[in-house]
Image (cartoon, rainbow, N blue to C red):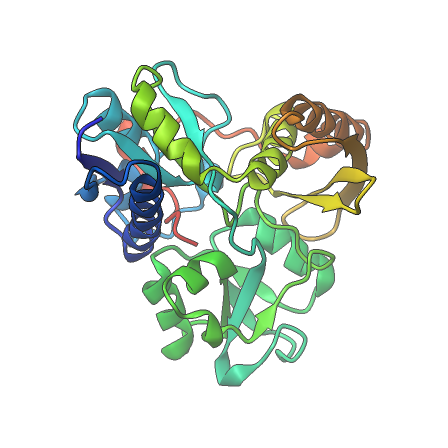
Length: 340
């Protein structure tokens, strides 16, 4: 394995921050297992099609944008322009591409969604008629199910751009992922943290995904030093549900898996939501499966996710999940900003 490793990352502040976070931990781990060598990681910035037109407010539901923040990074690894890539896991399409492997899923940051409201107002404190900005149908569906007296408008952009819309008065509040705000040190600006009972996150939210070529055996082994077994088994359950529902990041679907270890009993619990974007209809189900060791029970996670998806489909979830129209490649650039 070379002493200088090339890490592919998007150019946004959040992408570079979380990539550097992973790079620092990788270097530390390598220094422990191979103290006779000195390793360093260089960030290789890659522009994805989802970054090209960050100013657009076009809804993702009309763009078929799943994977637009991922494909260019994957291609850079396959072309040997970088050795591995770090993604926000929730941006990954369900299918794993040929020639790449999911080498590491580091320990997950808190997956909750948060609201940043004007005048330090929380979600329940916003007056009737308040305008909340989000590019996520999932967030819109769950907020409108909680309050039918608010207005949701679609917005895009990086974290600064979105928060700026509150500062300028364009909207009364915006909703972002707490994980992204924590990673760039702006979590104190949140005025409301949604509980999982109020709002389930996107499958994989708060987690990172690290991909490399499977033939890079030494690198693969190194990346797995940063893998977190509990996080991996949880996100596998969430993504198995998403895949069975045939839903992408444009769908009003939320899911959260948790691993409980009470000594003699270990369980994996998965809760999922699907709803109409007007908040009028929602489906929410929970399922639990016993596990022994998260490293050995990845098939259990997959089975649990698929089984819960079947329950959701039996309850009518398919009617709530839009099927995006095919989109020309040039229009993919209008998809949502994946940072938050």
